[in-house]
Image (cartoon, rainbow, N blue to C red; front, side):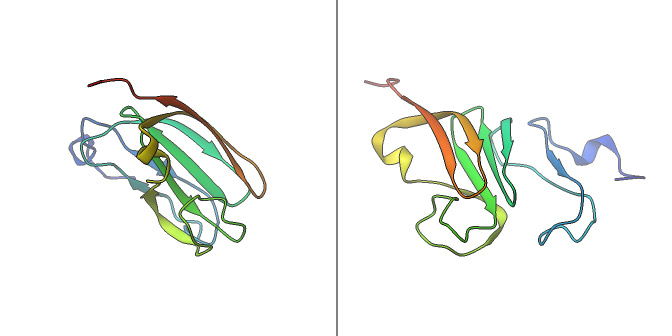
Length: 113
């Protein structure tokens, strides 16, 4: 972070993480999404939801209870797009991460219909 230039962050923005966890080892880190802008973030006890400007949902963190919605219980250390809801033509509007589950607000995407 220190000594980095502003040119290293794309115009779409970046997400920064801080603090000790199973994933960051108390070292600040950052990531960005190709061709999309981070819009909303929700954090649970050990998992995180990220909603983009295009209505995509990315999840990462602990997944012992399947709270990431990825169809498995494997822990995920990098943001991973959740595709299940997109099959219904939905766009993520909001997310609330709880201790062992996720609440997601969707809107049907009527563009192109």
